[in-house]
Image 1 (tube, rainbow, N blue to C red):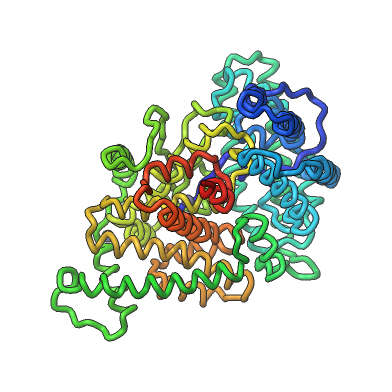
Image 2: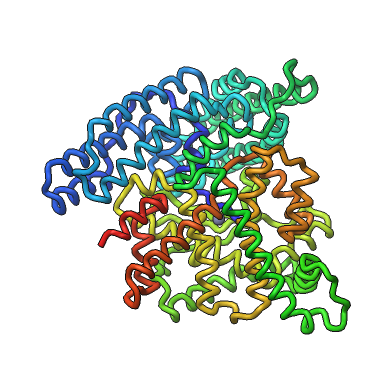
Length: 599
Ligand code: ZN
Ligand code: ZN
């Protein structure tokens, strides 16, 4: 399934910053925030909060240049944050200091919008402190240490002339040897799975280095600058090789105390769920809710399969077991899929159709001026999901948004067929809704229009995934796909993934579900192909809690929509609901609920 790659999230915990002393110019956007606050809310608390928020952001950009770059601010692009003890200590102090500053604020005197900003900053600081002190992924996940993202950002974001960007890159390269040395020193009893992932992802980092070299050759940098950059690239490559050797030696001679388990266990899981998902429900309650949703979906799918049986299966004998009947109908329908060489063309063809449908049915407003570029997933980002949206940060709203699709090349014919059956005629349409329109692409567009820098920065993953999953259902309810039983059956199968992601994640990380059990569960109860189940098993080893965000956010949005229908009765309209819901940036659904239920 589907992943979004915003802006800040991916970089947030990857590169923890050492304290920096370079000046950062106060941004236009934050100045506008202050002006807006002054204009709209004359209360002194609002002005005071606005000033504090501006100051927080100013320090945050310095503290976390990687997050700043991911958000589209490149002032500190030359500075590579080292994953060392000093950097982590400085980040921790930053969190403590700001938690202390914020505690002085009485939230009830602020507007709802400022309150949510305040809560989001506090949540971020508390979560980050927990990540640094308790979760300590920097010690056990070697793949967290990877310089590719920052360099790719500088190389491929058109924020300045190429030569200026290459000079920033050259300066940044200087710190790569120290970076990988710090990374090596940070590693303490890693997991085997993350160690192997780190080794596998190095090819991608090398590809980024090669691209830098290529771009430098065709640039108008001086001869001296080119030669300096070349020398630094060589040192960076050596440092990467050194880290690779270190990890390969670990694999050959495992740590004396054994590998750490990739299963994070009940205690860490409960805390991480609370920090990341920010749902009113606990991890355990959400798991229970997902179990109930699974039973309900199976029931509905059995009805649809029986309805479809004569048309799809003809005279074939019907097995007594409903799960078997569902599986047979899905398998038969899955034969309808695009040819491998038509995958990208078909995705490009569907996007304008989705836009037209939304406009014709008045479901929500779209900004069709912004370009969405379908492209092959950059190599260093491959390996986790089939498709993802890569959106520009809030300060670069005019940049391209990429729809990354992992190409089918380099796989066996059997693997390709399996993937294409999974993303068959119906599911491919749902994938495009989810990733692009009106899912992630549309939501992030609205979020970037939001005047709250904080909500765009510290966006809630469950809200973002929840919206994408909700948008699938909403589109089908509006009749997209012809309201056919085939479309609905495939929808339930797809939705069952979100549900089963939650169940799988909890059972693997908390209850010790084995690989064999997991794959059986995914193929037999979630009707997934072997290729999909294999990919999901990898993903659940590399990540935790993130897989629950789809169902958690979706369930919370559906509940909110019901509540508003009850509250507003015949006054309820879908379009204003969507517009208002998306207007708060990527705030947690629980917070949006508070704002929307206000009479
Ligand atoms: Zn998604
Ligand atoms: Zn086929």
